Image (tube, rainbow, N blue to C red; front, side, top):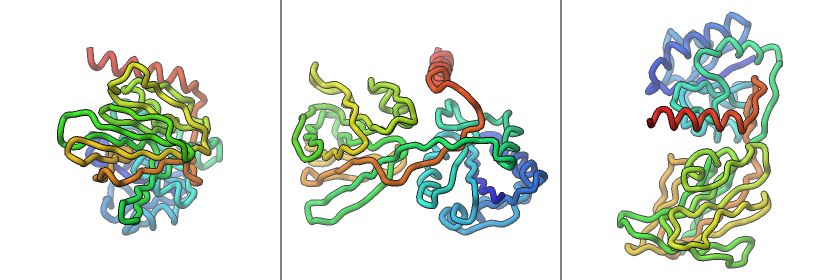
Amino acid sequence: MKIAIIVNFDKKGALLTASKISELMISEGAEVYTLKSEYSEDLHSTRAYDTHSELVSACDVLLTIGGDGTIIHCAKHAAVFGKPILGINLGRLGYVAELEANETEMLKALLSGEYTLESRLMLDVRVIRANGCEECYTAVNDAVISRGSLSRIIDLAVSIDGSPVSSYRADGIILSTPTGSTAYALSAGGPVIAPNLKCFELVPVCSHSLSARCVILSSDSVVEVKAQSPDGKSYLTIDGQISVELSEKDTVEIKCSEKELNMIVLKKRNFFKLASEKLREVNVNEA
């Protein structure tokens, strides 16, 4: 088996964990691939590649070492090439990660085929500019449309499947996948959605209305959003990692992607019990 390892070296203990994993995988007969920019003798890698695309296309399985952000960043490459991904958590919460740093021995199950794949829905996000130009993005967690530099609410006109359905005066709105339902959408009052469901949600952020509610949308729905802000600018943010400035004449279209993300599952666990435990950890840490 060819295993690609991508490491977030900003996380404490990342190199030590990566070295331990690569040594374990090689001792079990696997080949370990890394990025040239992350190459280290401590990683014991068999081969190094220049880009994420080259690395992911060459491997059978992608392992990330870091937090949920590391997984989300790499997940888009994994989905493009149809490669399964597994995250080892070195962050605080790790909703998306399958293993903690002290569970790396369980990775032996990869080589014996003792794992399952869980398909996760993603979003295609298209920005249609007033001049007809288009920009396309893919979201694993969410797409957020929010206000610009002025601390005022913005007006958001929302259409679903070609029909205007609502206008919000709010700080913004979140279009979230089930995977992202435990992220920003949850803190904005959205529901927790089981990650294997084929749907997505619209969550208003601090809406200036008593009637504004979260909406669950079917996987074949298409949402269009236009935003107006006091300074004429708003922003689209993809997975908290990509920021795109919008004008009042731009339209943002969001729908479910034809590509899906395959997450490797090694442990039998109840998603809602896990979410409850993670949320309890947040409360303890903030106390």
